[in-house]
Length: 118
Image 1 (tube, rainbow, N blue to C red):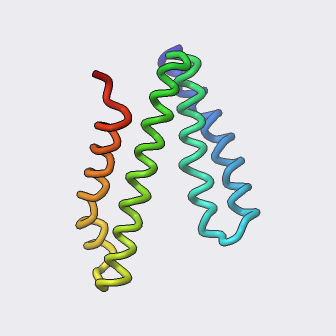
Image 2: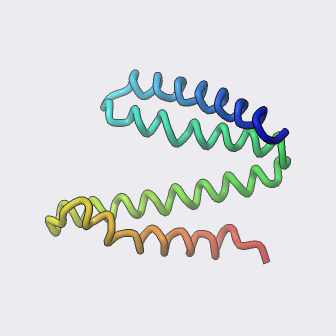
């Protein structure tokens, strides 16, 4: 399936999942989790379901591992940004820019150790 039908399927699956996770986010406290629950998991699940259907479970497994490495790299990045803001009093935009290397290093190390196919 390619072209318009695939885009429509992505739209429908993604929209249904975003709505479901948004509802979960609204039910739990604090409300700041609503955006996290609405976006990332729903996009990941939509991508995984389409990857399984189109390319098979082995490619979906690789995509899942890639998402896990990316999530870990992002977690390290956000914690580095928060530390710079809290401890050093750096402005948020500057901290975000300066910590880009943390994300890049974590992503490359994750790829080199967990994802690289030789």
